[in-house]
Length: 292
Ligand SMILES: [Zn+2]
Ligand SMILES: [Zn+2]
Image (tube, rainbow, N blue to C red; front, side, top):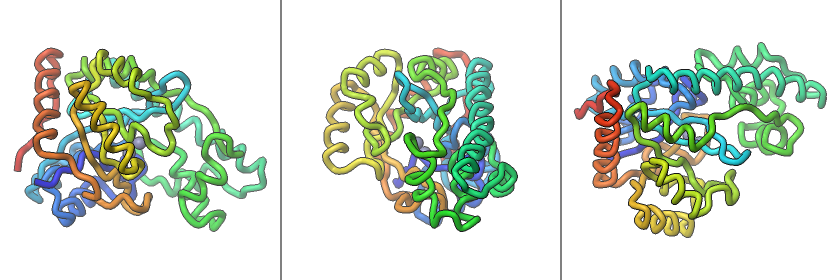
């Protein structure tokens, strides 16, 4: 069984519609795929319909923008009730802050001589629920200012570069509690990835596990073999679920092909068990995983 638990569609910053993403997942030989757009459940319904037609299993999820002591941390949330009011409120704040950030970024870029407008960014973002830095990067590519997204980030949009603007994110500890209260299970995305220098050391991960964190994304393109081996040990020690995934963004990210990393079926079962237990404790109506 081939299981990929982290992908993005046009509902955030991927380049495929949720339905096209499911078609691509089936073509890539995946049996189970999670849709985890940034801070939104918007693609779930379309993806679920497509997955059913293709005979693959969709796990509804999202990747939530959080902050731990001033640093950005991505938290994957699987199977939460997307209508749980405190979660809706938190995601609304995150999305509003992200959308407000685009004009601020554009203003800085223009001040540095880059010819770009907010309209350019929005025009390229299509129906995305969350318009953010990747769409600014896409607009810069479309205008020939840079060659690809990575270059836009490296030269202009990352922390310390001229177009970087801080923004509000949810508090990581609080969000772990919210996901649990919404009947879902949380997994730290690309825990020791390139862009997260030493934020989450082992004592911090242990503290988060006590707060209800359910798992660690171990097999991810941002992790080298050494990071994967060490994270796997941490997960075993703390009894956390171990996941692996592509973090696919369609054409928006190279070297993240669907299925390039996979989750072990036993670990997937553990994830579903934890989600079912959280759902029972919360009393919320959580989305179903439909097994094809
Ligand atoms: Zn991420
Ligand atoms: Zn992601």
